[in-house]
Image (cartoon, rainbow, N blue to C red; front, side, top):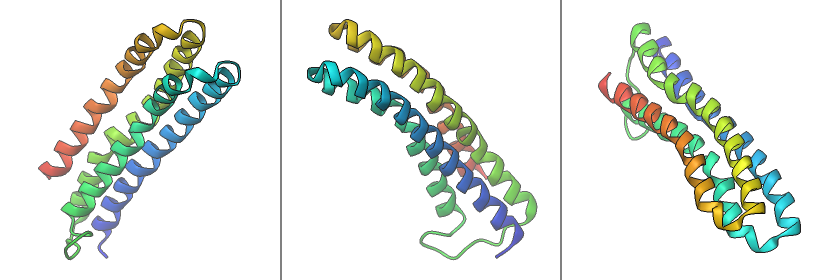
Length: 155
């Protein structure tokens, strides 16, 4: 394997790892808050489950970028490309928007989800408002997903 290909693979790995790590932390934070509320109000489980799941999307986004990169460089369904170091760093850099923002936004989204969970515990009819607030943080993860996809496909 060429050095450039190894650098590109490292970028894909970081996109999947950091997005997944942020999502795992985020889903855990929201799950912990949901479990506390469900212990007293089990009828809210469905509403709380949605709020818990929202910080999990960044892991999916990192996974998507990693798969696209692996397809692009021939690791899935082809023969691996011979990338020079510059090309490897280009692919690595293309993965960094979703890797970094995926990690951070999942955790920040979880903080918003936890607040929305507490709001839902007090006002069950306000759960849709909490979902909207939590989804607003998602906007920036989606934007960086698009940037990473466009960069990977543009190289």
